[in-house]
Length: 309
Ligand SMILES: [Zn+2]
Image: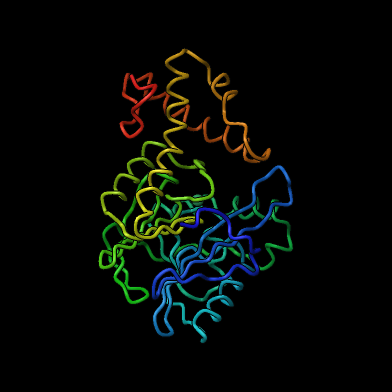
């Protein structure tokens, strides 16, 4: 399992072949602000012959061009990209769409979220990475809507589109190849860090349960490729990261602590940016758990253990 960053910069990050017809690239871009986190993405290229489909092409026009060069090195010939798929509406996954002529497809919820948020995301990313890094980057929204259950042909496999609502974001897409049990998890599995920005803990935990029930042999998420024998642990780690937030919130509620008292106990490891993210995630989880707790509902079952009532 590769659970952390490729040390290569965005420009030189290679495409790794995971299985025939499936290659993954994990670039990252450092923020100009030392108090901000770097931006990370995993792009997946599904290819056969000279045809390819790209899941999550990257964060900027320039990074799209870098991926195209990496694809040329991978295949030894230019690959004709017939379709781009955006797994969810986060800037790092979608703002490179414009580097390709190919149509873009996404779930309706992702399409809607991109319509609402991409302009702000582009502005924020430009401020964070600097004008030169964003040169040539234009918003290109998905024009094709993918439906839950629909089949997509790519890289010599049939992929079933699965929608996981209100999880990492409002709408997250999984691609599932039943033939060789490969699951492309988009933002729902992140080997690098947890970001709860537009998502909800309960929906994310449910999505992980759905993913586990599929019994994948291979799992590809953000900065994570898990092979046979590693998948359950990878899903378990993601669940544990969420449950840690749930338990901290729930224990605080049970002890009549305020939100700020709970946030003051957030993990303090890592950089200033890591600590800020830890507080942000805990704040999101707190508000969600507070609503459950006030409604006399139970703590999410997946996290039952210490702190459950
Ligand atoms: Zn994301």
